[in-house]
Image (tube, rainbow, N blue to C red):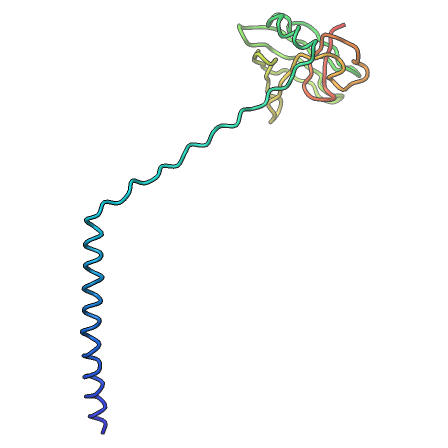
Length: 160
């Protein structure tokens, strides 16, 4: 009996083999036919549109200061509580900033004159001294002054 089961299994397995061969042949034919058909051109990704960087709106006093030119920055600027800024111009487009920028810190920094003010690096930060008025400094002791430079709210220097 055992032999008849094996023979029956072989006979049934052989019947399915023809079906599998015909399915495989059909699949192979599909593959070969699709190779003859050209693939569509790949779609290239569109480059992202750069987002413009907003520029700060200068105060009325800042517009007049910016129009004066690079020489306007040169000289001594006074802050609050002993803070000061001395700007000297050793080379074209370059300035040296000597400043007491808080109660405990002073230093000398190289700066570059740009259309927006003086860009300089202090520690790990790149900062900008922007022309402004005393109100823009955020310091009540400088309020009402017209010719000032502001680093950020709470740090500014004016001329009398």
